[in-house]
Image (tube, rainbow, N blue to C red; front, side, top):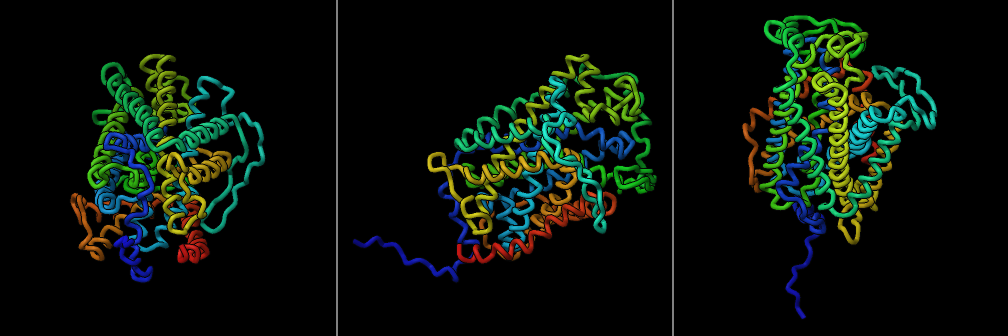
Amino acid sequence: MSTNVPPPVPASRVSDWERHTHQDIELVKGLGLTSATMLVMGSMIGSGIFIVSAEISREVASPALLIGAWLITGFLTIIGALTYGELAAMMPRAGGQYVYLRESLGPLWGFLYGWTLFLVIQTGTIAAVGVAFGKFLGIFWPAISSSHWIIHFWKVPKFAIGPMILGGMDVGLNTQNLVAILVVVALSIVNIFGVKTGAFIQNIFTTAKVSALLGLVVFGVLLGRNAQAVAANFGANFWHNSGLGILHDVGGGVGGSVLVSTLTVLAVAQVGSLFSADSWHNVTFTAGEVKNPSRNLPLSLALGTGVVIALYIACNFIYLSALPLVGSPTGATLIERGIQYAREDRVATAVMTQMFGSIGGKLMAVAIMISCFGCCNGLILAGARVYYAMAKDGLFFRGVARLHPSYKTPAVSLMVQMAWTCVLCISGSYSQLLDYIIFAVLVFYVLTIFGLFVLRRTHPEAERPYKAIGYPVLPAIYIVMALFIDVVLLRYKPQYTWPGLFIVLLGIPVYYIWRPRSANA
């Protein structure tokens, strides 16, 4: 009996573009527009918006520059989302950014991204947000603390290798990172039971934390104005220390007390705000499971990033209306400590305490824990799809390409990601993981957006259901601004950024070890 099936095309005559077109047919299309948008917002909103404004304030020492740092972050994030929308609609496959780099710049660049995502970017962010969950849980149970050790292996002394300053980390299991590990393990297991299950949890927690941010803004507008804070932060004081020609004396945060320009200070300050707005592209990792991806991926990226950035900027205005920006680390009251020295950098908690007393601080702590929990879920759900796609290409352990026989989820990938994240939880602090992450993230954002220019030239015939708004001007502006931030971070935060660059480069020899497997895949 004839089946009328044409003979297979020899592998040598099949382009990568064609070869990968149908690789995701075994995945379940379980994410609609609402779930995809919730994944964008839920992956972005973690602990950062509630914490990092304290560190940014210490860096910039200016209300205008605090808002400026968030505006620049918002501008970059929305440009990135509008640009990625074209790539997502063009290549709606599991792996997202890994796929875009593979197709535009070659498999080496895709592998370097996946390698760095696994070692630092995704797993490091999950660990950092999980540890932040434990930090806020400690408000209710003081026994949960980074200083309450269960097993303390050692403190790694600081040492220098060229421009890199390594070490200085406490390695071991304390009650705070134990909570993070339990959260990571629980959510990794839950996400095995179908993408719809993970999306259901994501939708619930994203709705809760968006409501919490909106509540903070509304209560801040109605009840949060403090006359002393308003006088200190607004009017003529708003622009204090913000002139582009003014030199700033920046302390230990950038490797010593040095005089630098305002633009340089803003670039350094972006670490916190960029971290808080990062992971917006995680929805592209799940593209193989999104319904009508050519429409829903670009739309979810635009809607999700737009809503979150608007909330972030509004929250910072609320912070400035409730607490003075400038404060003292030895201040006895919330007003005296200000935004700069809110206890343990918990700015949002300090603002709610200022408005409603101790009950307000506890309510905000609960909201932040909900936010961290939902963020971890979104990151865990999305990240596992990248390692699955790499394994399908023969560039990761082959077993990671196996799906759960019943739920059609990348169960092995989820478990591998979980194991490494737990290692990171016991290896360092929240701030150290944050700083390692952002430099590597920006490098790959720049490469991916540059890849859009390459694909416009090399694949002009490819179907593009959506084209990037503002191309080529806006993507080019993104590249220039992100490169400037990375160069400044290399100069002024070498103890964090050079290790990140080293991790990326270390992936090159690893790629050539894996490549023979890829050729036979």
